[in-house]
Image (cartoon, rainbow, N blue to C red; front, side, top):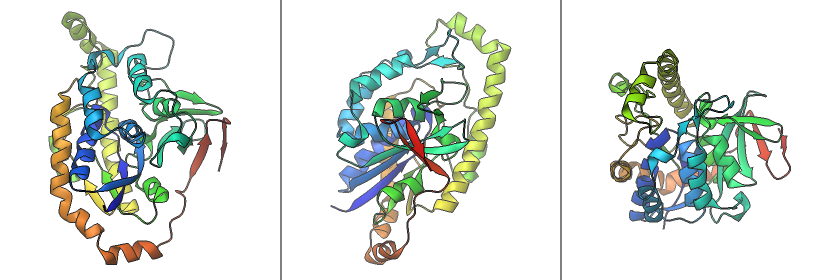
Length: 312
């Protein structure tokens, strides 16, 4: 079976489409030998690297109550939402597993807001790493890890192509991007915050009219624009061999969604990328990868959770 490395991008619940991409790659006889993920891509990457098949991941997601994932936070935490329900789901799937236990090489990214650096997490407990890589600033609480205070890795690198290449230098990198190409931006809906919590409709409608909610909607919309531009710039710099873009533009990052629909969208996107994947696997491309120099991604810190230390 031909081998590939995956770079799975962030996108909130749109990340469920990654499951369909995994299913599509498997259907076409492609073997995923390394995975780099950030935010939602980190979650799907972790459970896949642990050994769950795409169908098993899909079944877990379909059996979950999405409304219980995220609730309004009434604690002193510097975040709008509490994701304890989501953490419970992660415990069910990941247990006490560490990176070192994984059968497939995997790493995820976060951003240390103390040092202003991107952080590669590739050691220690998966659960801690997941709570860091999905910590959207202001929406979910940051994750303390040793001397680091970590937030969503997509803040600096929405699709970790260079990390995937570092994990598997000889393999083509398939980047799964959950934002549209620039020519489709005018049709992208506002990310919004109307569906962030499962509350009675009268309360939810009142909440949506509050000035803080309106301000957060403007903030998240602005950040979404920045994230899309940053994604395109990083893709131009890091140049993955293949880009797969599931058509998930209509979904908001915290929507309650039809998981089966998103998974099918992800699977369909692989069909559209098959020619690109075949070209990336041909022998001239393989020879060029053999001779290229791959360095550790720049301006990053390796975080060893087990020792709670970091080194440049």
